[in-house]
Length: 547
Image 1 (cartoon, rainbow, N blue to C red):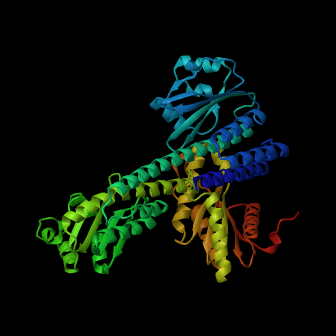
Image 2 (image 1 turned 90 degrees about the horizontal axis):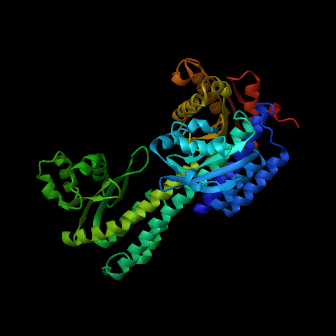
Image 3 (image 1 turned 60 degrees about the vertical axis):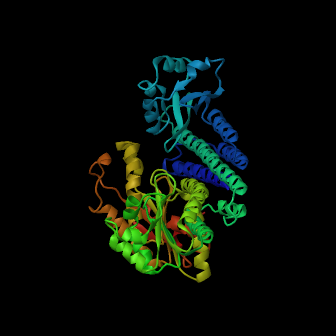
């Protein structure tokens, strides 16, 4: 599965690479001088390496692009290993002293590379590298550097020598794209290794369980089935069904805090009335803080205690629940379990201990897998869905609209003159503006809408069951909100306001395929930008691209 994720993600990078090259050539009148043949060769090389999916292939592609298209006479790649950066690849360097190229990753160097923005002069590392190491790198003729860094993970550091200036858009653009491609590949491999570790751990537990299993405990084949479930919200009800059978519960209620940013409560109930479910869910935090872990309490006992939730416990008791406990659920999380059953408390305690030993690795496995999937579907800058996720959902929503004969609106947003913000205030200001707009857009949509970053300064919004009237109304509301004083100015770009141009198209009136719908929305966006920007347009047939 992860191999498919890697393949899909790198394929997405190819599309983004070619798209951005085209956009920059269009917007900047051909500033990036990449020939059509060079782009074709680059695409072919990336696609061939994507099929293999190996780090060595992707790293080789990166080095080839640096040599062939960015004229790098010398290349040095230092790979991160045990708090040091060590030589992993060299080109154009004759017998250098490897020990002088071994760099200790100090907190200062880590922070410098983490805050990295674009390929930079090697002299910028002078505050964080020992003088001897820096001078040796300079004596080798290496002039520029860029790290292979993703989120909080450093994977390596490139040093190169090229005659291209730092202001060359080809150098800036391709070095950033290549570093991101390689860092993503490293990151997914690390996650894959982590998943393998968890799966090995579960397999060991299964083997141990098979040797000393109780006649009524879950058979190994059941654990294997659960191991295949990679979604934590789907896994929890399956785990509870297994526990209910093992412990012969007549009633069961389970609650735990999710790993999602909203910290919502995940629950799984069997034969529990709505009043008890509501009481347990509303008092989960209080119970988790006050109930001792791995000790089973009778509700009779708790109802006579001096704890602050006696009234709630009495409610549960009235609804025929008899026992309650808190169990560790991985990390610092606690799960609350309430039930009724005839099995002796001592037997339930023993089975809960065995259950926890099997369930926690299964949950960790599912949560880790979810994090990998989230990374592949999330834009690193804005936190919104990325282009890959947009494509996936676009096809799903289009098929749904076709099946049920409903409207589907697609809106494309372009931040006007983002390049001017970057040139005047720096790329940090441009990034802050992108995040600000992404947040405003995300806060303004319905729960069924899908907001994605399309690439560069463009965002997309999929609006199921929205006709032309609804799409037009929404476009104008967002455009006016951005252009008016309702949006607070950001300190990074001063008091200046910004605006957006928006284009939209609606299925089935404006298009009958996904590709046509995207093209129609894009044509409407181009029309909005051509009429002075800070404008929104719905697609009409007059906007069709003229060949």
